[in-house]
Length: 290
Picture 1 (cartoon, rainbow, N blue to C red):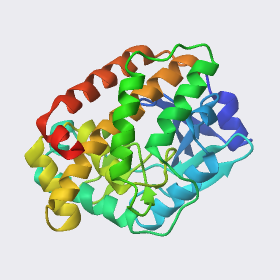
Picture 2: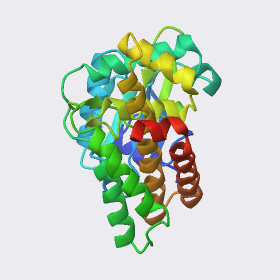
Picture 3: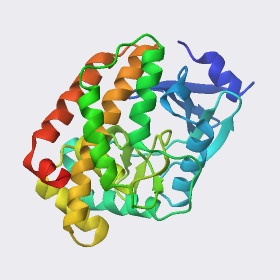
Picture 4: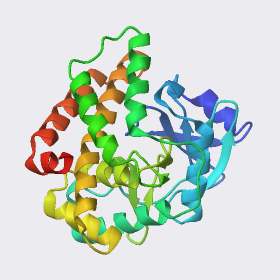
């Protein structure tokens, strides 16, 4: 794709230069310069509604994050396409190793806590229902049910029974390393398309598993977030690491059925199914599950 028509759609008759930003496997992201100002144009991928994405929820969540100083400023929302224009944020994606260091992990905890304690946002995110919805979509598009699904779903049902009492809070739900930007002073989170009211421990576990935090690093994350490490919190984090990978695996399954992007979604799903099996085999997980 050349994206010339898309840029002209947003800035008609303006002299705009742009470059494609890497990293996205659902959407196309462009860095656009117009009259000396820099923006990011987020062009929604095809059929992303089948992934549970609601672009109006993404807009509201991005605006909420921006108001807290932890997300990019929203400049425009292009309808009916659902494209999002935000101001370009200077900064770099921290190296994965840095994200495990206490200083940066503490900053992550504070940023997440600020968003979790913010005003309600529209939409909801329930990882237990998401994996079921993804299965229905994938099977409806001709995919067979993954061999590991029944077993993983049974484990998920046991986890859900332990998570039914916590109130839903605003969550990001996609804390991959590529979604963090650090300018040396402020840590920001981008890509709010899966945001919704959900389980704070899904966010914490999603960050922990995606950054491969070991037990001591996970405890530091919890201590920075809650001010202390409590056994029930540590166990909830352990259990939701499983749900993070279950969601990610089923995301890969449904993407392989609907996406037109050149990416090995089957391999992505297999990788996360393998990792959730490793999580389930760990003593800490078995103890937390009871």
